[in-house]
Length: 574
Image 1 (tube, rainbow, N blue to C red):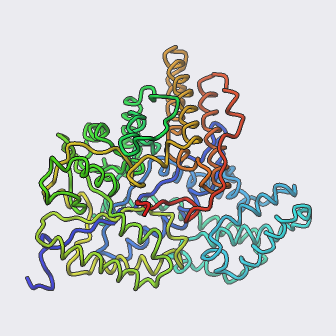
Image 2: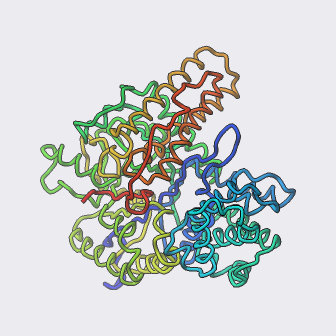
């Protein structure tokens, strides 16, 4: 074999890992969706990401799905199908406004719709289309002068709703779907028939998302992995004190210890696998612990469940190697680009390259696509040079699969196209998956302990330690103790028990704690604070117990302006 086509064993393994996740936005037991992000990301990002992989035959990636996302995607697809077939009610107010012939008549309701239709990236989604930009300017004027809301016409609302959803469509959809192109060209005065046409497009996209990734997996072009069911921070469920391993001075909740944490961790892992198997038809071999959160004590739970690999953040590894340096050969210290095991566990651990991952997440959106990909390939070439004599080298580029692209022109179309093409055809790089790497039984290094932490800074500071985050943990702890008391009483039927257990899991998700803290945007904190209290309230209702008074009071407020609106964080704070 020539030098231009070296054997794979001598090439640098590169894994692109995209994490697809949304928390449970459905407010039970009413079944109403409080936020629209699941279906909006589905018609834009989950659709585009599948299309780019389908378009490049040599592309490979690991795609991780949170089970709560899979369930919501399925539910939305069924809702739209039911609406189109026999007029069934859509349980998302924003999507229902687009679909239903009769629009809200109250000025307050109409103003609320205007505000919702402005929740899009102004530069890349709103200003890209002149008609949408003009409507947005008018909507802002109405919102600044709410007394003028009586003058909001039905046609104005219809056009704004249409443009909001057209802007949120994936770039591959806009380029390939003639019906979308006709609607964009029409520009204004959209009719009920136009609205139904767009609903049909949205329905097709929603119903196709899961199947597209399943087919890619069946073709061997992606590896699909899973997260524990409701995206909990597993090490904190096991032991809140684990937060002190990376943050010795952290202020912890009054809760002390989460009741029955080990049982809850097993439940989330078991139900996550079950949900994954239901939608994809096979058992996953890999797991992305929610937020890459790991601890030495958490690893056996993944091994017990049969996972072959997990992944986490670079700073978790660096903290762990620094602590264990006396136990490791000197040349093993701070070796990021390789596989590890922990203590006497067989599960293989891979770690995120923060620098390369954050370039995609935060830096490249303002670059020309070819320059950005060229820069990334140059970094990978340098790593290939450095690690040329080290077998089993693997670079893990791990980030959200949905949140970065609205900051890129055309939803990252040119960047993703160039990225997959550049990586797949590079003579020194082997674009691969963790499952394929493990087939070759790569050499691994062993660390005696992991310093508990996440992919964000190598700590749990995003989910615990802040006064509002700690208050949320105490509220969750109260609900869990109530749950345990009711279950022990034996008064719930099996069906009621299962419903309460699932609702408890939703309350245990990481996203609520992510958003608490005054450094986050006011609007996002307001939404997630309200939904967290609503989810806790639903649990008490399912248990047949009186709600605590504090659930009727706001406990967290935001006022910050973090980069990317707070939906993403850098792996390192420097």
